[in-house]
Image (tube, rainbow, N blue to C red; front, side, top):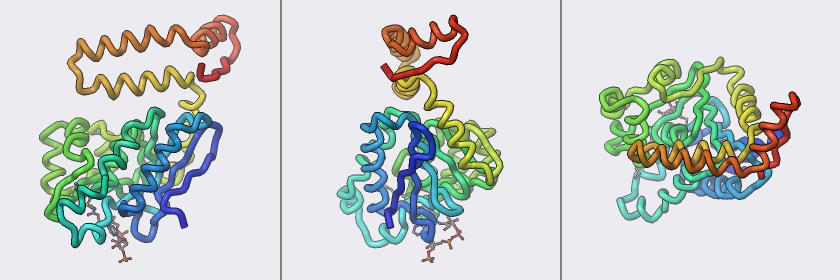
Length: 256
Ligand code: CO8
């Protein structure tokens, strides 16, 4: 059985499912490699405009597979090439939506935070419990959680391992939207469909500039934004969108 499955539940949408429900979708080295290959493939696949990531069963992901780390040393960890696995997700040029049901812990929370939008079921829990295992987050948890929550709230959770509820995560700005658990997948796919119907080049540039500008000085970030905004005036989709507005008809976008 595949550790990661890919379905196409709607036009231009790929639904990526972590598929180790008995182990609460713990991210074994094999699963992380499968996830990397999946993302590299989806980045190249022109028929896909938006990616949704979710977990099979009642848990998004319980994080790194603890069994696979019990007897390893620092060089074993380094040789696993995990940086490349995460880079494939972080560098995906298409919008990635996490649909989180149940726990997103450790690497699972880091995976959700690698996504652009987080849709959480009401029962979802987000946390970085690594400290309880004598380690610490290694896939962006200290940085992404701190950027989302602020230093003082982030350290409270990083140093105690205590989770945030979906509502707390929403109030703190970590989660984009909270929905009833029973409609989580449907709502995430609906959102993916709306974004997939947008002009793809504009979508891609907005994502690129938000990420590239996030840690740049404001002047540099504003410069990036202006250049990208100018460039979009050269696309067929921009002409089509504006003409359709004037013609009072729905636009059709070809991604050109
Ligand atoms: N790793 C391996 N197996 C796991 C994991 C895990 N992270 N989580 C759950 N499992 C397994 C359990 O061992 C159990 O297996 P079995 O049936 O064979 O006994 C099965 O999944 C079901 O687990 P539970 O009975 O515990 O399921 P519950 O639904 O009761 O609870 C939880 C679900 C709350 C998710 C619970 O399983 C849990 O707390 N899991 C551990 C969470 C955790 O500590 N995650 C952090 C892992 S460390 C990490 O992610 C970052 C590592 C960074 C390394 C640094 C890199 C440089």
